[in-house]
Length: 217
Length: 217
Image 1 (cartoon, chains in turn yellow, cyan):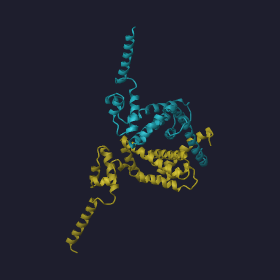
Image 2 (tube, chains in turn orange, brown; image 1 turned 180 degrees about the vertical axis):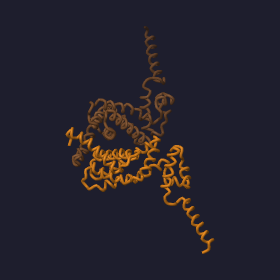
Image 3 (cartoon, helix red, strand yellow; image 1 turned 45 degrees about the vertical axis):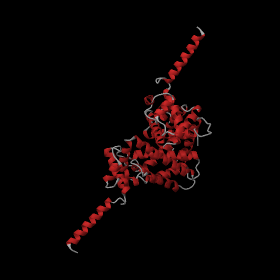
Image 4 (tube, chains in turn yellow, green; image 1 turned 60 degrees about the vertical axis):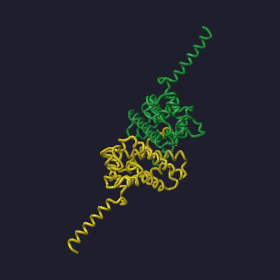
């Protein structure tokens, strides 16, 4: 093999690699679009960033963008489906006959796996984008409400009656939301799992004291 | 006074009354706009109804509409401020030192006064409009979240620590939301106050049992 052959081979490989970065069916496009979008939203503002700009910034076309996301907002919310799946896996993991609130505790432990410590910076940035835009806040709340609905349905299908299922599910998403807010606070170092357990314990303590004073149980 | 004089006087009064109904600074314009809007939203659909049409249907101008409401959606949500006031009045009514969840119970009792039985039909119609439109659902959730925030702030200002304040406030709006859904169900006859008390009791029972089994308190 001559030096020219080697140079030619190296150039070919480089060209193929560049081509791979450019072609639109390459793997990982949604992840790259999400990362780029978040950075653009955070630096320029959500309203000031277009889908075409997000796509261009990672060498993709607007058309590719819309093959993966129905709109600009969805880039921020596409993880919600997996989060819901994590919650439901936790429901399934609880043995039959487990009390509703303990089933929810199991769902929360499972959901915590969705937020490993190395995701904290990403989650923080995403939240700052959402906090700056009322329409995004509304979408976020809507998605959280959907999570509660799915959780309640999973509880009902275990035989939990309707009211208890809805209450346990709503309490679970409340705990989740509060733990999440604490988790992304600047300087917070506790894990997501630890925080959800603490918040749930506080809820049970608070209501337990009221129950004791009212002598309900 | 002759018969002609009397007829003239009656006619004048009628004309003035009609004029009063037409002029745009007449009292009650917001209420009439709300009622008309709700009817149009329910029959034609929210998207298909314009602010101008709502105004015209009660003999007012679009300009008057926008003096009272920032946009078409706000017609459905303008009561939220009074609702928040009712919640906060309930917080204030609880004696100092009351446990957070019991302060919330007091807030719920006060909020119930906002939903007398003769409002049920109106609330049902309003909810059916909201249920048909995702953007309205998002706004509704946003307003409910604002209510929880206000309630948590009121609890903190009573000396309740941050986590307990947020948990109690969120639990309170959860109970409120579930009770509201039950209240507007077709055929439901229990009062709003009765329903919130039942849902709160169920929450305390459910969490109280978990507390007992975990031996938290």
